Image 1 (cartoon, helix red, strand yellow):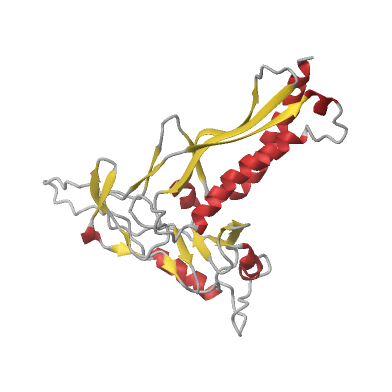
Image 2 (cartoon, helix red, strand yellow):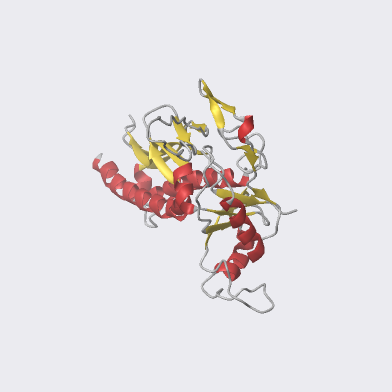
Length: 309
């Protein structure tokens, strides 16, 4: 009789893997992933040796590393368990038991998804700071650090600060202004911060506007009286809001998706999976969705946030 549990697991496990992959792929363009066996993960921001100095043919030009900041991401455990009884499985004419895998996968994928949305929605939260001691969206991000004491980085006040926030409503001109802001950023070692702000992030209420501004039919500027060429035509957009999480109805951002994958990280100790428990009761088959993960950002130059009044 115990073979019924083996048959169940084939359906539950397959449904879980496929459903989770489909759900999490919607965020793949914005999110890097790492798997670690350590208790936490250090995500490093920008840094380098700066511009080279003229060489006189004799004397060595000694350089020094100009540092950014490191963000410590500490994964946490999450789980949900669902029991399936022998009789339930045996008379399951509607396939409810086989849907356990699908529903557990939905729970697992949406848990990760909602944590990502909360990073965006909480970008202005003064209690949610990165390695530089500031919220992700801040007008006073320090450009560089002087190094670290233990795992705490000391701000280099002489290097100045930069802002990655605006208060403009979403428009073509606001997007181009944000792109110009980003192209004036410098790295901790004083070099231009090379980026391509190629992706627009919006809440659900602004999706229609995003389509109008940068969709396939937006070759002409919809905001220009002369309907000239649209400078943001071809920009991709992604909705980062749902339910109570993510961007509110007016908030938006523009980012470099390549750099986002390097500097905005989903860290797993254990990727979401479904486990079948060995219970003493032969008439109950227990399935547990489990994940051990954390999310964080290592730099703020790759994204400009706007929070209109």
